[in-house]
Image (cartoon, rainbow, N blue to C red; front, side, top):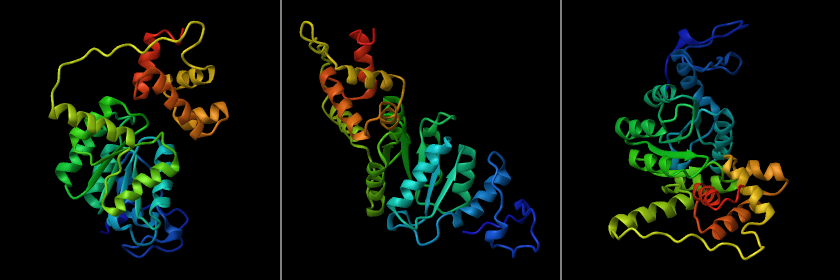
Length: 281
């Protein structure tokens, strides 16, 4: 779909006017976020972001809604790698996203759940009601219970964690082309657990505290404790890897050991358990 917005095009230094309805490379409009006119410009430019035919499962293109420029650019790069030639567009606010969804044809929208506006679930709910043909996929840096629950309740068909490395995210997002729903394995396990709990209610059992370390032997190694401290500060695996000069795979290995030793299954639970046991003291 082409949107005619000649009044909103800025062409400093142009020597001749562009033909109506066509965006010339030398007359490419400037994009400034935060105004309706800027959103109209982005709709016009969206068709020029990635040339070629869209992926089979993302035939109408993909919209990335994320307030962080670095995260948005990273997801755009990963999607381009997962589906070469895919039509991509980006919005930094929910208002801008709603305008673009109404004006441009998309089949998938990636919604940041932990952006500056906070309520990504509201946009997912809007997509399910106003654009039921569009698949809404939630994304966040961590597997926060509240964010995951809100996204699922709003109607998200997938959930990815941006703390995962590029290859893992590309693999998950590539499943869209096959008609699948990209769901991080940690999120999938949690969802299955919720279904199991709702299908067969059972008495609440008090979980025993993990066995303490042997006398004189710390529960976590110095390296694991350092990684856990950075996790408690909200750092992603990539950020931790760069800070301690290790690979992301090594950090993930340490994280799994931490979860096992503390008898937990998520970052949030690990930090809570470590605090309860005084490991940060």
